[in-house]
Amino acid sequence: MESQLTILLPVAAVWLAAGVVADGLPRLRSTRMLRRRTGWLLVLALTGVALTAAVLGGGLLSAGTAPVDRAAAGLTLAAGPALVAAVCSVRRIRRLWAGAGAFASAPATPAPHGLRAAAAHPLVGLPLQVTALATVPALIAAAGADLGADPGVTGPAITVGALAVIAIGVRHALRHNRFAERAQPAVAGSTRAAGALHV
Image 1 (cartoon, rainbow, N blue to C red):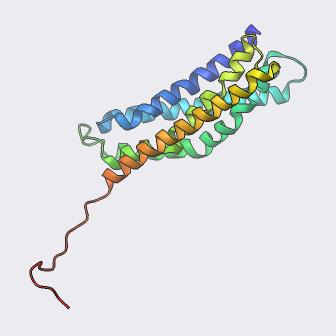
Image 2: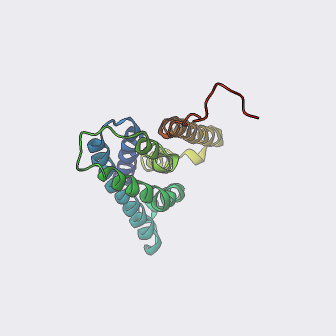
């Protein structure tokens, strides 16, 4: 059990750190800090994907009941969100990092609402946070508690997990929409004289 937990803890810690950093990106007000944190997030996301793939691959290559097999079995729930993070989140984080780098000549510039809206996009933070959430059952099982053994616990646990994912998704969507509305240019007024009615 302890060796299985030793394998799973770094994976869960990296995904949790990535989720926390991603959640704080839209609150950053300077482009320098936004670029720095986006760089950290890119490293964390790539590390999380690599660690998850290594554990899952080790479980496929290993035969028997080795600790890596039990760790890989516990991470099967996190495989889907980790794949979405690898395909969608990493690409968006890299583009956000490059966009913040366009202001490198003026690092004290406040972060524009367009960049903050991109940082608040659901596909940046949601897959990372869902992956971190999906590692929790594996950690609980590695610690010795079996959630699947009692049907009275499994159902509520799945419901709570699904509600947490929905709440995180709605929060990201609302925050992204708020920043996206601020990023839109102001509508120019009509240049026609307002005095006479033209027919």
